[in-house]
Every structure is written in C-alpha cells, then in structure tokens.
Length: 215
Image 1 (cartoon, rainbow, N blue to C red):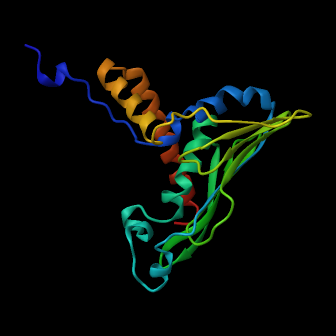
Image 2: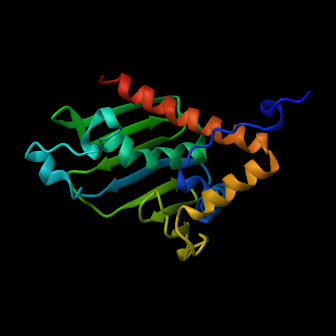
Image 3: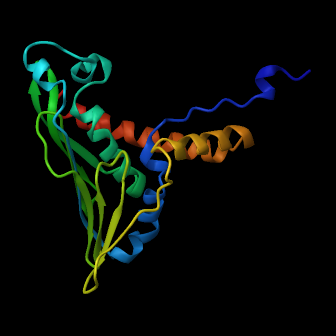
C-alpha cells in the first residue's frame, strides 16, 4: 500500500523575490562580459516610516530583533540574496551595525570572495540613492533600485555606451516566484527545490557569519 506521504512530495521553498525576477537572470547571463569581478556594492537605504516612533520607544516588529526586525534581516537580506545568488557563499562575512535599543537600525556587511570583495549596506534610519553595482575589469552591471524588486539593470562595458533594460514580468514583483513555486510543486521538480534550498542555506550561513562577529 502506498501511503499519503509517499504519494506527495514535500517542498521547502523560500519566498525571496529577486531570485526569480527576469532582471536577476539577465544579470547572471551578462556576468561573463564583465571580466574579472573586482568590487560589488549594494545599498538598500530607506528611512523607515516607523523609525520616529521607534526613537520614542514604540517598538514595531520592523525594529524588534526577536521578530526578525533590524536592517540586516529586513532590508540588507535582499542584498545578500542577490550577491549569494550570483556568486555563492563567500569565504567570510563581517557585519558592522549601528545599534539602537538593542537592534541594528543600519549597518555595513562585508563579504570576502577571495578574488573580489562585496559590501552590502542596509539602513532603516537614513536614506540614499538605492542601487547596486557589480564591477569587473571589462565593465559593470547596475541595479537601478531596490534589490527586492530590481526594476531595471544597466550594463556598461568599457568604451561602450551604457544599456539600460528591464526583463521583469509586468506583473507584481512576487508574481514570478509564485509561478516558479507552482511549477515545482505541480511537476515534482525536486532538483529545482533542492537548488532553492541550497541557496537559502548559503544565505543563512552568511547571516550566521555576520552575527557571530558582533553577537
């Protein structure tokens, strides 16, 4: 007799938007054109609408570390997913947070890949132009906007004009991941599910390395 458990496959899939966006795949496809990667910088800095209340002592989930709040896990996590999705787990990671009331309201994460370095900035207590750039010795790729939505990407090769394009679906930014999840479940694609889980584990390893540096 075949049990219900044997009839059904169980999948653990992390709902992380940028890994399924068309612009993310475009970046992966263009990486080889950049030559040897030298520097990666990501900045997701957005003044939180709850920060003023936080300073008054009103702690919303977005600033509650016990609920996954703080800049590293709330905003910078998208930067980490982007970098790890493109380059895998780094050799090491170090986090320098700005702490208020026991939570990181902003911070700088550095990741060492040996042949190149990555810097990821996440901030809920200040704002800046939100963008991310991968720099190689033959050119660069820039995400124009937040790494959770990746609204467009600019490719600039040495000595050539920049080319900005958008390969995302016209639907909501979560649409692509839901389509991918439905296909994995419907077809029983354990290979795709394992690849997604391996990526999530690599991101969690970065968080563990980052938090171990400062507790």
